[in-house]
Amino acid sequence: MGLTPPELVERALATRVVGRVDGFGLISSAVMVLLYPKNGEYCILLNKRSEEVEHHKGEISFPGGARDPEDSNSLATALRETEEEMGIKRSDVTVIGEMDETITRSGFLVNVFVGTIEYPYVF
Image 1: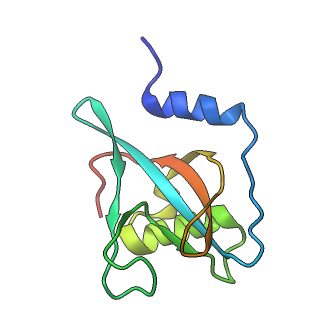
Image 2: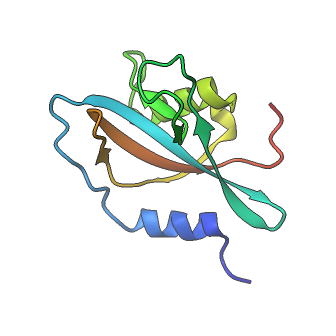
């Protein structure tokens, strides 16, 4: 039996150096790409942002947002934002790796993490 998609992603991310970019003057932020099994396939969880938020109103996105002063690192930001936006407890996310940093047109430096959750998830 072959590897599952999360196992393939974890293996690929474990053997590479995360690409970093110069984020001087940008807003530090992080997102979580969440994979979950459903009906024999793996799906990616997306979020429709509220019209009430300051940035990226109504956009379809990965759960995430700007780093808060109490966040110890970018992973803590991604996990906190996932819990706040999606109701998924930090302890229920299995982090499998980090992808390259990226910059948005709106001035954010984004750290991208990949994780898994069980399905169905009890909110």
